Length: 292
Image (cartoon, rainbow, N blue to C red; front, side, top):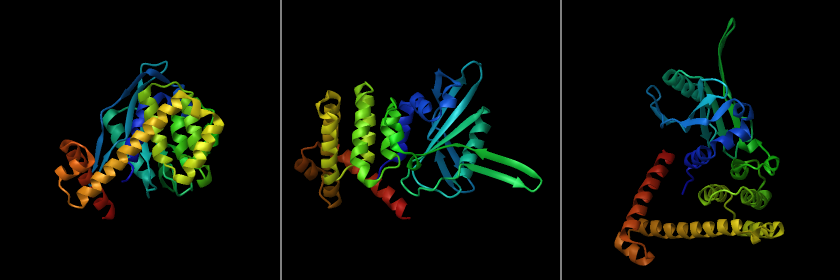
């Protein structure tokens, strides 16, 4: 089943918005009144000519620190490379600027693993005698950032996004351990702790050999004796068990077994199996769209 990158990144950034700004946009962080941050309702932008619909990932209204004026921070999480993406960002900017008539600070987090080349972050229109437009957005391209630079950042966003930075295959177990080490120092409430640990586990889902290396690193760090670490591991084990059960249910439904039979085999209620049946239909539709 595919990863819902947009949902994961939106949940992370909206929950830790000030920490995200502090980490990646320190100049902006110094300009805003953090008590004024207001997330605006979901924005649906329709491009009639291209036949596209786009839901803006995150739009926050913030107040300048020493002024009575506001501006918007628009954050997009882009999980794949896309031709003319900078032009698309300008179109989003133009629509939002027309609607709100406020200055907009646009930000993009590129979260794909490849390609490693730097993504364009400007869209320009020029003539020999006239520069009509130069639109630029702040770009955070994770696969061009070294995770080692964030090892000592006391910031929950760093603990999460290290898992998507420039990591060699051999480093995966170590990076996962470092993410957890940092996470256990932050003293977050259980819900926020689980949000970040789930994010890390999604993007650093280790194979059996990597898992053995990970456990050895954890033991060397002494994390296996920390209560916070044990809580994270317990939540991961529950999540893994739930995923296995869901896989059994979905495979059984695909094979044509009835909802009642699947419920009897798995020990779930009929209502729970029906919920997973709806999930299966959604996944099938998504796979069909990707094939087309």
